[in-house]
Length: 256
Ligand SMILES: Nc1ncnc2c1ncn2[C@@H]1O[C@H](COP(=O)(O)OP(=O)(O)OP(=O)(O)O)[C@@H](O)[C@H]1O
Ligand SMILES: [Mg+2]
Image (cartoon, rainbow, N blue to C red; front, side, top):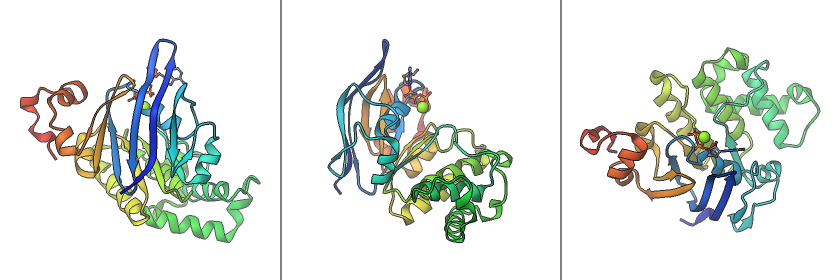
């Protein structure tokens, strides 16, 4: 496997807060890389820098050898990098199908409001994307009438409709009811593996991390404190104490 995305020496401070304090990370083609770490560690900041929403004060990010810094979020999407948000960014007054259709239209550079919703080819593609996510039954449901699991999947379906090769997901399971969580993750992992999408995801649920991550990066105060396979990282006493918040001896359930 070769590095698809490579970050080197990323730094970004907000006043006295070091949101990125020397981030070096290679994301390998085809892997699922989980980012874990406490609130305020800089996890979202890394996604924002990679996708053009924030510019680091130092460092470099390359994707397939091309420099990303200074490119707009739209340009970066055009290179094959998509993201989903900590809080889903749906058009709540539009249906699930319309939301995905609008993402497809944006990908194709169609910016006439609502016109794309009438195009049969766009609708057909949106229906096909929804079928892959198991969302067909909710196609005509408005965004504001979805439970959190369906809202998250719709948000990710919109990102996948952009046909990315790399997808960065910010807390894809946060707010999803415990009973729905594994089904939501299983669905999105199946879709992403089928489409051969490399994935980076921020996750607070260690069961999800243990089950779906190929590697885990531990963020803390703008730095990567540890990086490795889940069975190693999730049993590291320091990670257990600082990130997961449990004393090592009661941590047997955190193993992969
Ligand atoms: N645009 C901004 N302006 C000012 N401060 C910011 C900005 N973005 C992030 N920060 C600060 O940078 C630090 C890292 O924030 P970030 O959102 O990356 O953390 P996080 O690891 O995603 O946390 P969480 O788990 O709560 O989502 C925090 O102290 C945050 O308040
Ligand atoms: Mg965050």
